[in-house]
Image 1 (cartoon, rainbow, N blue to C red):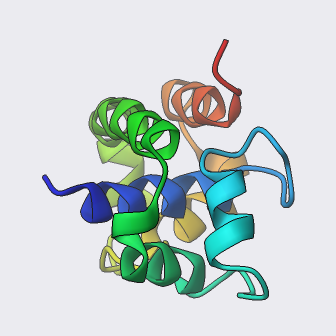
Image 2: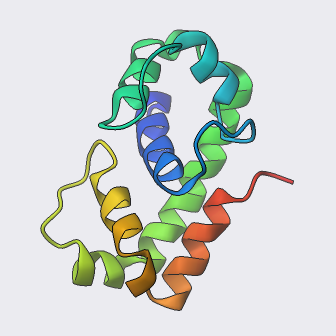
Length: 123
């Protein structure tokens, strides 16, 4: 999977579940540098980073690789919740992440725990 695709997927979930403007958000420095003034939401940050893929830092790329692995696990853990709560949503631009976020109180304990682990900054 290309880095830009991983950036889009990883950041869509992270931005849906992470507090805004946190310094520990993956790629925060890259976002501040490359996408200054781009409002979050609707996939705009992800699109901006995709346009600047060649300029994304090695640290951001490494974190995105790590997040991609975590997201694969989250997708497996949350498959039932996605089918039950978000079956009408199509992936892309954070739609599934937003759907899961909107149903946060209805998520299975395993899915909720897995998504919460994505919010935690790396040790």
